[in-house]
Length: 580
Image 1: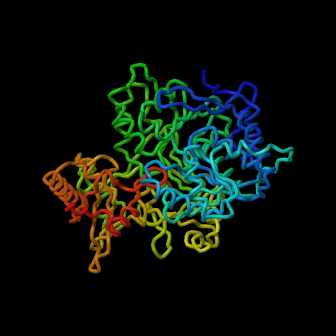
Image 2: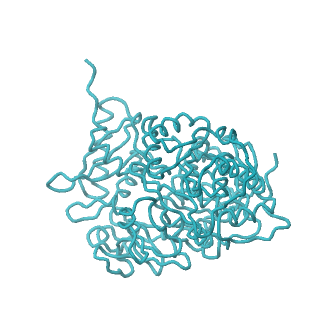
Image 3: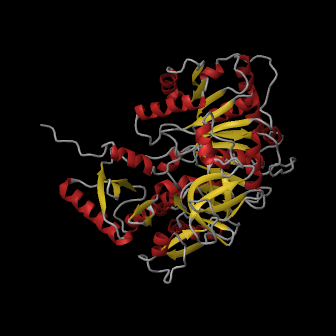
């Protein structure tokens, strides 16, 4: 199977400027580009030109309308990377229903936990129908059983079984909602972000325009990112669609098994745009560096974006060093910053500048909340390096404020606020939660900490994750990265947080114990405690977590420190007594 073309021969490139998702798809369907799905072996499984995506969506829309679903009702979709997701998502757009993409049970931790998550998402969205891959039909049935309003659920066969009636389509309009996005950190108490057509169009215009990726004729996207996450759905479905690009897909689980296939697909199809959180670049180096094909050519990769978690300069430098012999240009890196509450993107670094960093005095940062340049940038005990994540998108505003709401000057660390046409109107059905983060004049409290540097944002972490000990600010990432740097644990195998003892804060570090025997476990605990004491000058309690239990992740694959802390407080990490 030959890949779909990267260029439309007779359709002029439009970089966004549409009013709705149906309008975007109507235009892209006039060309030859589309989407292709690949296996873990890099084999093309199926392809769908955008015109086929539109035709299939029309069929699904007529089935949904004919089945009596009312405009504005919600359709929950388990968002695996497969053609059926496109059928359901775009079909809902043309039927006037609101899609609700939700995650699949990968790394969530068992059937009961996934069912609990689905039930919460049903309740939060008020979905009246749910579809997904056949393997999850049983989960959907079990979760839907508690909600009498759910009139249809199962695999895609339940949609196929509906009669296609000769009804008029009723696509979602520019002044309506587009879909509901559950933010990645909200699996326990899910907040459904209301994504409006207008906000999405504003965000897409910024992303594909000159201030973002500056998409040109012939660009091509490649992605392994999950479609239930904003970076996967908006960044690598809706943004390429808004510029009529072709997209090559690998599923997240196939990427995790064979990360080199991501790079192979980029090289083979001459993809120019692909994104990943830092951990994806790290995984490609750790699992793929020894198996790099001699003919791998990454010189086509024009924009190598980073987002979705804290951008780690060291990880990106190792990736560039590993693959520069294969044509990878480190100036292709584009650090960026965003979140679901602003559709996706808030800031972009300027294309072609690569990863730029700011190294600050760790002590001053901790005690005075100020990013003062480090006297000796090479001193790991007293210097802390952050990645500069660029300027806010045109038409948007970004401010850094202190706890009293006062604007802060450059290099003063505070909470990041953003305002503009991409900001959500609120969480679906949650006015109180919406008021907690949105001011009456439209400013969104992102919950992130950072500082401005010559008009660019530097993100230092999540406010809720910040550890405060004896008046000092300690970033949990500093602890976790110190353990990784000393090769005590692997990336993602530790979580640092604090608990209130009644007499002050105690630092706790939960570590996956990939060692056997009491002596090995005791040695691991000593090494962790010593490394933490050396790196951030605090004592800590070390909790050894069996690999079979694992550390909880958000739906987008990021470590959830808040859930790790909740598990610790609930006693889930206590050693079980030996059998009598």
